[in-house]
Image: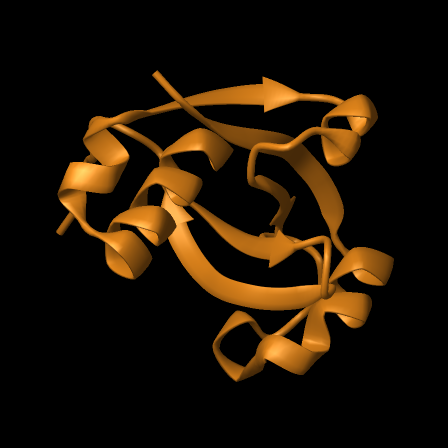
Length: 106
């Protein structure tokens, strides 16, 4: 049976760069959607509705808004299901950085 999906889902690892902790492994259409889903789980839909999500660069790490490093796990050789919060360093070493996503107030 061949099932087609309207959007290709990618497996992403979302890392909080401050404490260098892997927050969650999420399948999503894009890095921005992965962060929106993560914040929705952590803070609720009202919080997400009041936020704007944008792709930033290295300079975003020095800003006041929450920033997430999003890595693509597909084809990285990492076992996405076996990763824990302490595996952020391994993800950063082996996976490709997909985006730096900034969550800011609208």
